[in-house]
Every structure is written in structure tokens, then in C-alpha cells.
Image (cartoon, rainbow, N blue to C red; front, side, top):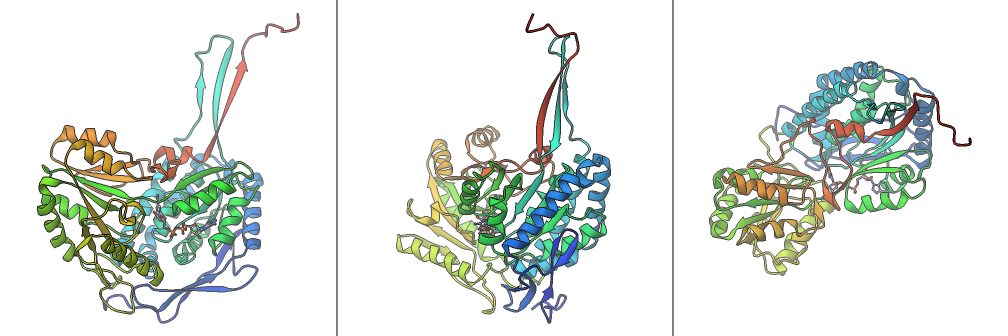
Length: 492
Ligand code: NAD
């Protein structure tokens, strides 16, 4: 156990945030999160009800329809967003600790994500002032057309457990920059950092009701947001199954949806790649991350040598106590999730696959730690290659030609991300154009920045987040034609 950061002696107590007030909600029931790396209780927050969700929707609606936020200039909104970014930066260590304890991810990664989130809040604050309409003065001398961009309205934001703070940062500041108001429903088990953020929103002077946070079950609080006729858009980040529920529910008032869902992302490694570098990149974060690689599509002539290199790298990954600054891979989310991931490995073996590295539990038994796992000889129909495992398991599929590589990479219902490893630039660019993925990396993986839009293809996504597209998502476009000359009468 790392001595620098100690485990809390009692769970940290959080409250929901509705209409600018901290509250335990209508039922007063509490949920307790145990650290998946240590097995001790680390946080508590209310289990919100459908009534709490309704209360938050009313507050957000009131703040949008009658409050100051949508009516301020973008410059005034930017000032508040910059203040929030500064406050997040000042609280980065504390927020990182909350994230690490609740998700099981390594503390260095967690703090790094908070720093990344500050950057996104700052980008969105600046971008607020760039968002604008358009004028068309090329329609003839009689007509001038103007295009207005208006804030979309009240937005529900439903987030997953794996990147609670960063995923929120890729949505909430853009929603606020556009002039919308929001109700956030964080994941049941990792709500702490979102609730802590509410303190910072209040300190920065965000008007009451502009952001409301209701914790609780997806099927209760989340579903109420999806079903509500008083909400104009819901952004859901989570599994493809939850995305399907959102699509079904949106029929009620034809609300707009933003969906960021699952992935089954390929690393395509060509024989001419820098194999040492590629092995390091492929080994990185093959785990509980939506855009992390989970299929290794490797050219057959180097498959054996590359797999051996990769296995060597993966065996050196430091798995263990999330609070130890040296740890590279922390704990799985909970016992059920760990058993599910181990089940995928067992089923793969039953269908003929070989475990080249890892394959089982490791470390302190109070935590849910699993060895980074590499599997070869994988049957094409095994769920290992088809389903999102969301654990540190990488399945190897060899290919013979460029066309095979692309066909294998694209043989998935998902299209979130892909990484391409080769020294041949024209081959890299051809692969970049042909691979079906919203995010592509060449000779690198998982690079990111708030300037660039992100999202996926096929069943991974609907809409885009971040970049200027990230604000456009939360605006309505209104077009007006203005007559400049006396009208020719229709009825003579
Ligand atoms: P999940 O789908 O179980 O839950 C996500 C959120 O949806 C949670 O807040 C949950 O409470 C809520 N929810 C569940 N059922 C609901 C319902 N009926 N109505 C409304 N809300 C409901 O996902 P998870 O296990 O928290 O997160 C892992 C998943 O998220 C993976 O599939 C991963 O790929 C995906 N993910 C995608 C991205 C991306 O950018 N594409 C990023 C992170 C995670």
C-alpha cells in the first residue's frame, strides 16, 4: 500500500444539487460506494427518485425559460466558465483522489484526467464567444437571409462510471457555453466528482437551476430524463444497450439525442511498423476505456514475433493499488464486472483460444485486479471478438493483405476508434480513409484534445462532442428571410 495517500477512515458524504441547493432528495436513502481497489467504503450520496428528477427538470426549465443564463452575452458566460475551470484546477488533487477511489483507476491517471478536464472547460469558455449565426446577402437585392444559432434548451446529461469527470467535461461546458441549462445524472457508483463539481459551480457564481445533479439508478432517474416532455435533448454516454433505450424513449417528444456508446476497437499493425513502439502503444490501456484497443489485427508475417514482444510488454505492466503513484492499471469496477471479464476469457479458451499472457486475477484479494491478458487462436465467432468486454483483454487476429486488414477491422457493429501502425505513409492514409471509426490514430493511440470533435460511427454514436461541433450540438439553427424592397403583390 502506498504511504503517501491514505485511505479515508469514513466515506465522504455528498448531496445532490437542485435549483442551487444541496439536498438529500425526497426519499433520503443513501448509496455507499466501496473502493474497488481496497474494499472499503469511500463515498455516500442519495439515491434520487423520479420526484427528484422532476424537481430538477422544473428548475432547469425555469432557469432556461426565465433565468439570466441564456440571456447573457457569450462573453459574460465565458467569464463564469473560466472561473469554474480555475476552481477545478485548484481542486485537481482532491477530485483525482475521489475518482481514483470510486473508479479504481490509478491516481496519476485520475489526476491527469482532471487536468485534461480543465483544458476542455477553458476551450469551451473561449469557444462560447466564437459561436454565432450567419448572413446570406447573395440571394438577390430583394432578400437578406440571416441564420441564428440559439441555445437548444434544457439538456439531460447521463454519464458512465469509467470517466465520470472527463466525460462530463466533454459535454457540460459546451452545453453551458451555448446558453443551455442542464440536469446531470452521473453513474450510480461513481457520482462523487460530479457532486463535488457542484460546490465549484456555486462558488463561480453560476445562477441557480442552470446545472442540477440528481444521483440514483439509471432505470429510475435516467429513464425519467429520457421520458420527460420538458427536456429538449439528452446526451447519453454509456453502453449501446442504454443508447437503444434512449432512442425508444425519445419518441415521446421527439427530443434530440446525443449518444456516445460502446466500441470494439482495432489496432492494425502492419509488418513494416516500428514493432517495439507499436507493442508499447498496443499494450497501453487495453482495458476499461471506450476507445481503448481490444482487437489486435496484425500482419501474419510478423504476428508471432509481435505477439511475443507484446506479451513481454504486457507482463511488465504494473497492476495494483490505485493510490500508488507507480501503478499503471488499477482495479476492475466491481466483483460482477471482474467475473464477467474472466468469463469472456474462459469462454474464449473453451472455443479454442490460447492465453499468451495474463488470464486471471492478481494482487490484493480485497481488490478486483486482473492481469493484462493477451489471447491468440481466437475463433472468429467468439464474443471475445464481437462484444465489448471493457476489461484488460486483447484478442489477436492475423491478416494477409491490406484489404483483409480493413475488412477484419470493420467487421463489427461498433465504429468508435482505430489505431494504425506502419512506417508507410500512403498505406497509413489509405487505412485511415477506409477504416470505419470516428477517431483514428496513426502510429499513436488515444491522443485527444478539446479542439477536435469526437464521436464514432455505426452503433457507437449519434452526434459529436468537443471542438466547435461540441457547441453546435447544443444549439438550434433558425433561418429568417428579410424582404428589403416593396413586395410584388400576390393578389393583384
Ligand atoms: P451503462 O450504459 O450501464 O450506464 C451509463 C449511464 O446510463 C449510467 O449513468 C446509468 O445509470 C444510465 N442508465 C442505465 N440505464 C438507463 C436507462 N434505462 N435510462 C436512462 N439512463 C440509464 O454504461 P456504464 O457501464 O456506466 O459505462 C460503460 C459503457 O460506457 C461502455 O459501453 C463504454 O464503451 C461506454 N462509454 C462510451 C464512451 C464514448 O465516448 N463513446 C465513453 C465512456 C464510456
